[in-house]
Image (cartoon, rainbow, N blue to C red):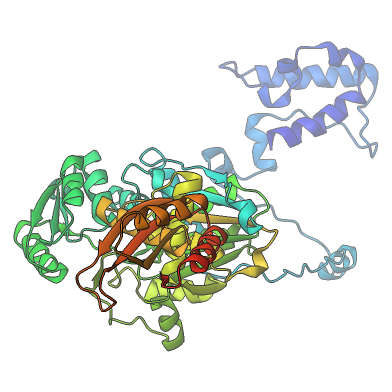
Length: 531
């Protein structure tokens, strides 16, 4: 109200004596003409204005009205109520003679009604985008922001391929994101007591490392058949590792008993909102790192929290991005759940040497709901395509991806997505934790599937120089011999013959076909051992 009164009084001054304009602002401002302890000052100011009015004539307003007396603080009640001076909010009232509604109705302009377009973003009440953003802010100092780089594999398949390299996390797995957000959300009392987990998967290694980094006591219960390398890794991260029982079910039962007796928090890879929000930060980073994306491919299967969480982020940012999940043809867990409308418990407590744990709480009702609402397509790939994907990643990207990490690229290698030709596609390589014996076995099998390692047998006369002639024929085709065995005892052939079995390395399928044709022309007893 001070400013309103100043504005009115300034208009009065502009129409009055110009001498008043050069006076000090505090002297001419009626709101600051306080008595300051002098009871006669207010009266003197009134007489001063009257004398100036008599000298220069009446002060004129816009309506040529009479002179307005000076306004003092005690006259503020003419503009607002006394309660305003005490800091309380008051309201203005205006009285209109006659019918007040008619002139107001005539003066009001019609306000156009805004029609709100229906959002194309799928609504998601369980996992909000705000939850994923909060998780990204909270875990940014504890995880790596992994690159999403253009891959040299793109030219071979006609796709602009970008690999999100989550295997570069400290434990080699994307699951660090969800685990870190879970652990940082725990109450301080529970953090002091500690946590316990019963699995030998990437989830266990993520819990072991992140809990140790947060100085939370952590216990990992593993079955006796766990690879020694995984046991050593968890211990090196700072966890107390206990080997118990021959199966994963025995280890989990023992972990629950220890948690109940000692007050530990038993952690499982479940589909809670916190865990999915942490995994969903991958979708945020992909959207930020690669512009104009058409499709993003994630691994699915029994552990599809990464798929569901990241899809929630991507669909919120750009609903036009296609999200595809890929799972193994042997274990189509997600596809079966989408058909039946419920999560199957058939594969609970089932551990596969290559795929790890296939079931459990990680694929529950929440994940199924998100998958049904947000995922555009779920496809399955053969085990052979997945092994070839591991081989391509190792040769072209120097990545030792495991089965889960190679699942996304396997969908492109298999040719199951021909509609992606010429499009910008991001593939998440989510993990790279594969024990060395299993890695060697997978790569050997992949070379055979890629027609780069071949095996055949030839029956030769048991005379000097016959094996040398065979090696010369192989050498002329520029083929490398990896192994050779001969057998001349357990044969059903003629006497004085021997069977030579060769393991050779070729460049590709056409090269192996060339070798097979050359040997078949020279040796009628050639037996090519198929895959």
